Image (tube, rainbow, N blue to C red):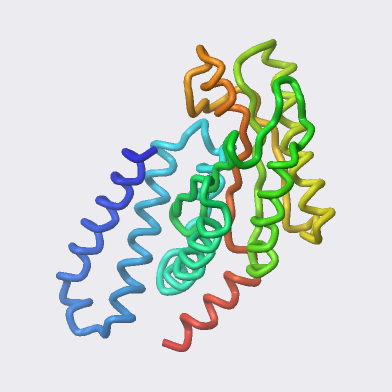
Amino acid sequence: MKKLNVYVLSTALLAGSFLTGCNTVKNANNTQKAAVVGATAGAVLGGVLGNNVGSKNNSALGAVLGGVIGGTAGAIIGKNMDKQAQEIENAIPGATVERVGEGIKVVLNENTVNFNFDSAELTSTATSNLDKIVKVFKQNPKTQIMIYGYTDSVGKDEYNMKLSRSRANAVKAYMGSKGIGAKRITSQGMGEADPIASNDTKEGQAKNRRVEFAIVANEDMVQDAQKEAARY
């Protein structure tokens, strides 16, 4: 994960440095330079995705990285996402919050949104923390939220896929009951894919029984950012 992020950032920065040295950019104002660099970084990110994300396009990371607006509009969206990511961190200190591209990846592990073994029932700890993130989502209505449920590796693959789907759906249903519109949310089971800890121990298995969110701009946010960018 970290290697991919470093690669993306380094490549984008190199591309930006090259462009800002070109004659066509030297006489541009800062906003214009930012747009050029942003657009180039977006193109680079797209290439990196094709080469490095591959089969993980259905994961939270792949969903976040899948659409890059780029340019000034992308920078405006990124600023909004910076703010929202900080709000999530403040609301749920135990969550792992990562800004990726123009979106946010959130991992709610066994300390935040947890499931008992072989269960899709939300615990009291889970609902308490979901209430906190729902509050942030309500304060930032112009986003799409993708929910991914995961299991440990105990049991058959088919059963784990079904269980992970039930876990993602349980989170989706709970958020819907708290006022998050159904059109904003999608849910998907990932089974035992992409473990974040060893399944050889009980502790690792508990960490892998988790929920991840991918948060991206919806069409309204994109249009607002494009309109704002056009004023520069």
